[in-house]
Image (cartoon, helix red, strand yellow):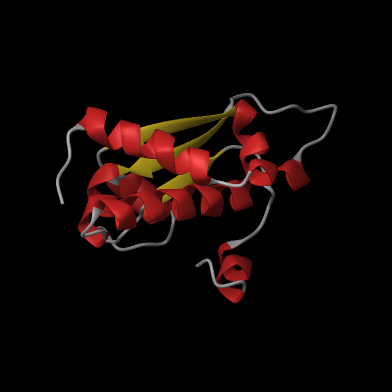
Length: 124
């Protein structure tokens, strides 16, 4: 599946509206940005091979690591990677569902939930 950037952005917006309000409310102060694909540096940071599959990435300071005396220097950001997401989805419905799952997965990192715990919960 290959979409234009504009069409992909529209699907991202639709997918975010599907996220339950109880979770979606935490997106108010998080930037969601779409990139074509992760950089090699991002893959290495995540412990993946240079051709690894990375659909999304949370960049920021998880809530459990914050303190009132040392606020984060940069806004929290969720990066979505268009090409890898398109590679694993063969229908528009699956694409929208995968974007929703990826955003929720990255929000979990905002709360300090690790990859290991997400796998235990069936979201890894």
